[in-house]
Length: 341
Ligand SMILES: NC(=O)c1ccc[n+]([C@@H]2O[C@H](COP(=O)([O-])OP(=O)(O)OC[C@H]3O[C@@H](n4cnc5c(N)ncnc54)[C@H](OP(=O)(O)O)[C@@H]3O)[C@@H](O)[C@H]2O)c1
Image (cartoon, rainbow, N blue to C red; front, side, top):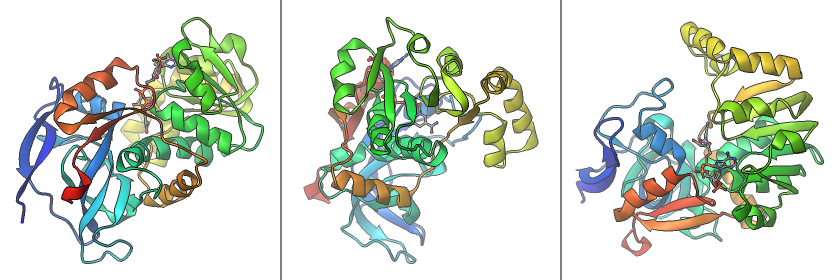
């Protein structure tokens, strides 16, 4: 019986890079499963968490094992588990207060996982949960895209963009996207109808009367989205500022609601002037939606896009590469070999 495992952790915010250390094995509750992690993906949220950038929304105790999504094999089930059994290959995005997938094992609530797509390797499956759920929740749940509606997806070549383009096309949208010239072929192969080189062109000079913008950049780029949105349209951002609507949805205390109102007053002005809605999305884990996504991957309607696979021992390289902002699709960490499960 193992008592310790390897995990990549930080001991304080703004630590240069996580270090791999021995920590006690996780313990499972009645509604949890223990998972031997085979692969995990790097997401920009891991870097933001490391640097304390999400303190307003999430508070963590140190030391903190980083990592939000994974694929792996169930090695133990809690007393109340009925949907899964030992040996099941699964993938998932853990709850934000239970992160720690850059480790050999993790305890996860059964509601946050699903059986991994049978046709994908563990590395490919690990590329899906966080970005797949985020894109599905933006494009399907909030925008409710209908065939022939027009959507702009910012940064089509990134972890989010590469899956978001495919989901938007699956829903029947006309898709415009931004990237740099070296990634044109990639986003075209994923189905993008119109491509804008963000280094040489302004998207708001080229596009107009859009139903939706999926903003992954925030700041001025988010503000400019209101120049192309048509009345009744929606701008959904995952990198902008949370607004009052978000505070209400999350039942946040009044002081946070007022603080969000204050910091987003310019965005509120822009949405009123454009007669459009601004939504900030903070994605939610969902085993149920991963079940839905599994069917699309197994039907090959969607496919994972992987930039590179990096061994766990070289996690520093993975963080540095993610920090460069140049990833084409997902950066995957290979945590353990499957035969050792
Ligand atoms: N709120 C949430 O729930 C949530 C969930 C997931 C992600 N996010 C956030 O969403 C953002 C994107 O995540 P990601 O995983 O897609 O990041 P990523 O994979 O690191 O994005 C890298 C890609 O972005 C492109 N890019 C960089 N600057 C650009 C610009 N100004 N215009 C167009 N493309 C640009 C790069 O293309 P080039 O190499 O051509 O420059 C590269 O392909 C991050 O800030 C992340 O934290 C939020």
